[in-house]
Length: 206
Image (tube, rainbow, N blue to C red; front, side):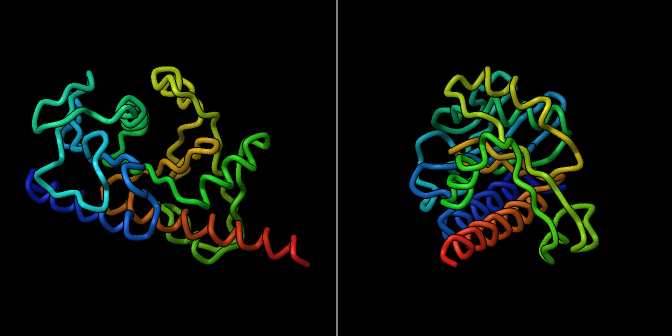
């Protein structure tokens, strides 16, 4: 069992790694890891902080009512969505990125409602997938500035058979049983979306 300090250091490092890959520029993105499940307490980055300069001590602990119970700062506006994902899937961490690829692709395919990923070797980095001869559909949900409504909208999209969802024009939410697994899922999905975007651009140029 990791101590709170170990979780702080791990989450701060994860956020720094994602920022370094330009997946959460400036204050973009929000990230949580479960400290306890009953009742749920989340270790999170506070709202409005630059993700490239975040120290472990700046992370806050938030309860199920979105109250900061340890640390300084406000809970992220999207904490409610993190809580809904964690309640439904019993996962251990949720990571939300704002990469160029997921922002563009989720807006482009919003009317379709899903992005299909198939045939790529890197799919095997996702939990439960053992062959590149696999097809996985990542759902796209409409964006909504009312986070309470967005959190209710997400429920039918959530499934333990997928590692993440897209919010149209907004980015990726990925999860895992642990912070390490959630980060792996972000990295694999971001890679696959980047490949898909480049493939589409190549097709247009031919």
